[in-house]
Structure formats: structure tokens, C-alpha cells
Amino acid sequence: MDRRFSFYLWLLYALKHKSLTLNEIKERWSNSSRNIDDKELTDRTFHRYRDNIATELGIFIGCNQSAGNVYYIEHTYQDNPKMKDWLLNSFKLSMLGQRLQNRNVVMLEDAPQDTAFLDDVLDAIDHKKYIKIEYQNPYGVRRIYTLIPLFVRLFKHRWYIIGQDKENSKICILAINRILSSEILDEFVSEELNAIVPEEFFKDSYGIIKLDNCKAEKIRLRVFWPQYHFLEERPLHHSQKMVKDSGDGEYREYEIRVQPTFDLKQELLSNGRGLVVLSPEWFRKEMIATLQDMVSGYTTGKDYSGEGLGYDAEPE
Image (cartoon, rainbow, N blue to C red; front, top):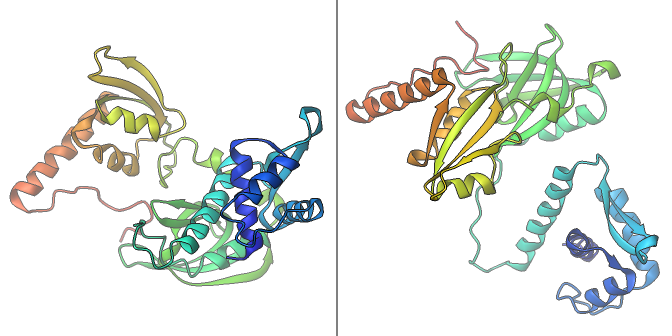
């Protein structure tokens, strides 16, 4: 890794946890194992690197003069904390890879695969142009889309493009790894057609599925020890809140307000015997029916999935 980026990463992580004066930054850098050249950090170099971090990474480092000229991470170019954490973690992993070359001491999950068309999608978004996509869904059906590319999302190691179909104005959610070809068109998208806020779009969803004409429902869960610790460390949804504690450590109950989608069902089932759905009653019965079908499938070896067409499938 470029030694400049090594310093960028070190500085961002240092400031993520505590605001520091320039003298404190200099002292810490002089004692850091990242400073492999053992070079002193000058005022001029620091401010040049500070500007570079803003222009190259989109992360702005502010200076609070009233608190003693301490430096801190002010905001990202989108004021998005998740984007800031993503950038920091990405650089951290990049640095980790450099430090652990030829060391068989780290095992990572697979990175997202088949992202060949991700650059085209991002370029179309950046330049506010339509993109033409040839797409094949999981059932082998091919279709050509001309989309207003709105934003991309990563979910469970897979990138998705969320776009508006030029033909019928419907919002499409397409897995980028299923794109067969793409072409950025020389047609610009008007500003008013590109105004969807990603967090607002998915605010009632768990995962990548968003159902039309389906309201979010209040879903109550009972989670048993020790599974509720994992649920609190990694909440299912931003609406999650604890509403009851058994008092003896046996279980805790939570409420989330989401659309009851296939993605949500899969995630709830992944908790095994550590979680049960209490309400609404229709959803609880649907989960029971799914579990009964699973038992039948394991018992007979036959298909009891019963899920029907996927959300992006084309019915015959």
C-alpha cells in the first residue's frame, strides 16, 4: 500500500476514537509501527495529507479551535456515517492484507463476486445517464432493461442496482452478478427523476426485497438466551426495540416494524430454536407452516418449499 494511504488510514482510525491536537498526532505517529521510515510528521505534510483525505476519500477532518485546536472527523462527502465506516473498514482490511502477507493466520468470508458491471452502474449514476442492461433472472428468463440508475446496495455479499424502468416507471431491484451486458446511454436523467433517498426507500424493509402495496407491520419476537445477545449486538432493523424481559434471563421480547418479506423469514429462521414469532398471528402461523414444510421435506426428501416465483421472476 502507498505509504501516504498508510498514514491516512492510521490518522482516520486515531481520530475515529478520540480528537487529537497536532502535537499529539505527531507524537503518536512517531511511535507508530505504521511509520516504517521513522520520519517526523511536519505541519506542512500533515495539512497536505489532511486536504488529500478530503479530496481523495471524501472524509473531512475538522479543527475545533475552542477545544484547544483538536482535530476530529467532521463528516463524509454525504454526511453518511455508514459510508465513513465502510471506507475506514475497507482501508483497514487493505492494510491488514499488506501486514499479513505470507501469514496463514486470518480467514475471511468470500468477497462479493461477479462485480464486473458494478463500475458501469456507478459511472451511470455519477454521470446521471440512463443505462441499458441485459439481465437474466434466477429462472433463466432474459430481459432488456433501460434504467434510471438510482443507487446500489450490498446485501449478503451481493451487489444490487436499484433503478427505475424507463418503459413503465417501476422500480427494479436487480442483482448485478446476473447482468449479462450493460451500456451507458448518451441520454441524461433529469434531476427530478433521480431523487430517491436509499435509506428512505428501504426504511420498512429487511434485506433487499421491497413489496409494492404492502405496509410495514409490527412484528413481535421472543428470543431466548443466549441468542438475544447476538440480536442486540446486531439488530435486525433500525426499528428494533426491546419491549419485555423475562426477569430470570430466559428470554427477551422485541418489536420491529417491517414488511414481512421472504428475506425477513429467512433471517428469522436462521436463528433456529433461539427465536419465535409471537405476532401478528397470521405471520406466526405462516412461520409454523414453513417449519412444518421443512420437517416434511427432511422426512420425505421431497420439495415443500412453496415459495413460488421470486420477486424478480417473470411469470410465464
